[in-house]
Length: 249
Image (cartoon, rainbow, N blue to C red; front, side, top):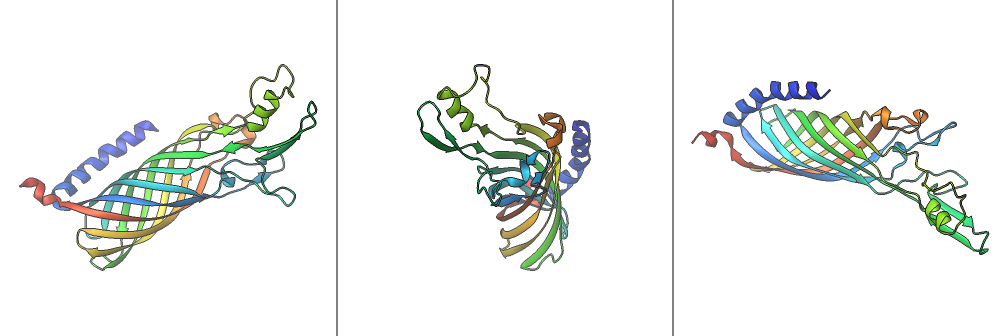
């Protein structure tokens, strides 16, 4: 897969070089949110990890090269973060919340475990503009990205039981069957609209679908293998800080 990415880079380089001397270069910044979705529960595994994350934040920054009036090519670095996970059922509002009775002290102890998700990506995104030259210009894009996905699970239930001496002597490691790390290829089709109040400054709104093929070998339980699916929405701005023809002067 890495060889395919290198080949793609070599194929794109002549196109980018041509754009550098004839068109505009823009610097992009965007921020927004995302929400994972998918099958939330199976009878065999219980709640799955990825679809049950709460809405998180996303941000990205990079450059965009204008190849022609209709076609542009963007490259950026992105990050997606959600620090909340929750699976709900009619009899339980939060599956990370727990309550135990300390048989040694007679005390009832409550708490909550923690499960986050961070994704870091490098993307290449071809864009096709439908109404170039108009102040409101809708566009379509289809990004290809390389992702590092990681999560951190904090088993506070186990830690509390261990601290209070409520676990058997052989239980010295907290239980965690969640995916902790994965490297994977993804894609991100999206649609948006760009507004250009000034020739050097454009604003845009975008929504799309984000998919990541998670490494099935990194799942601790084969029955819990899944991929990452999310709806992403963001607002951004682009500053055209130089017209590329000026690079020749």
